[in-house]
Length: 145
Image: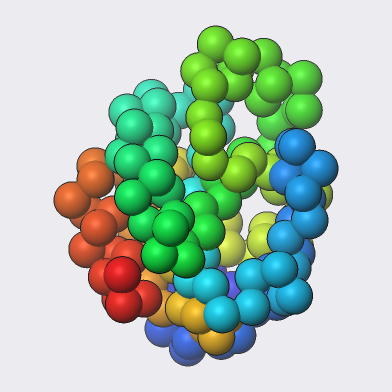
């Protein structure tokens, strides 16, 4: 299993495949030419909760410039995630890990984990842990945003 840091260092191209909770399919066709920021998170993670506002702000500000933000919940049930989102609504695209092909990007059980892909689908950066909006802005700048 490749770690996020290893994948980012190699710049390997990943054909992301995910189905969001709203039923949207994200794949090589729908993401073609768009940078993608993944956030791996859990409902019990206080650091994930503290970074939610930053993730949502990045999505709102940079979505019109093409950035796709996908928040991938790690290892929790649909019911648990939907209950959480009812209390903590998010506008970002949300997917369950088991409905994606992205499990190789999880390097442990410490969250949040961010992985950035450029417009060609190459992994170009990672961030381990919460860092707020400025930290995420520095990360997405690597994709020219």
